[in-house]
Length: 265
Image 1 (cartoon, rainbow, N blue to C red):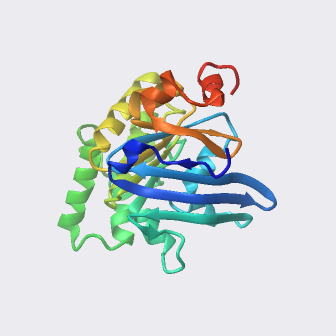
Image 2 (cartoon, one colour; image 1 turned 30 degrees about the vertical axis):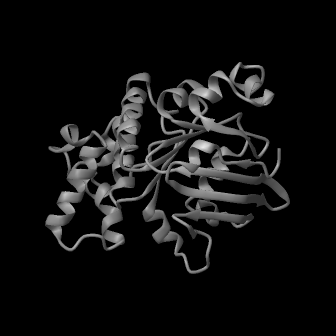
């Protein structure tokens, strides 16, 4: 279903944050993404599901130009955010990544204090005028990441000294400290225990009030719990995209049905 336009009727009634049109990704001669068209809505959690190697993480990294760091990678097509082409030559990828935050599969706090982990982005992007403003950004980011109560008396301690779930919430606080408009999450719970996973899922639900959240997950249960929209990827294409309950209970494509019922993947 290459070049299939994945724009459902409900999307047209809501604010579209990101538009992807005809996006292809090549690693050398290997085509990893094959003409993806999709609208990602604002103030909504969108999950990308599909078997390993289907292209969902590759496409996620297109949304903040992380693939730019791979020499053999070539991205073609258009990705618009609020109507602006993020691959335009005038766009600074570093500034783009302040607007499109990212949380990775494994918690990766910097080898710095809890405070400096969160303060790093606002400092390098010149988003604060003084120490008092920076203190406020750090506190508010940790509060929004549901980590302030646990961290407020430990701000000078290394972020690496936190538990796995706390480290991931610290990485979320770091990502939102630059006041992004979009938050990308690549398997954010895969390295966490069930309790920490539940905390991150609750946090994702709260964050969608402020951000467009896009999450890659291998867990269909997680996608069903946290997202309002779901895109099913297979062999570099989006096979089906729509409201999460419909994707899981009444998919239109047999491949989607086969995947969610465990026939492959």
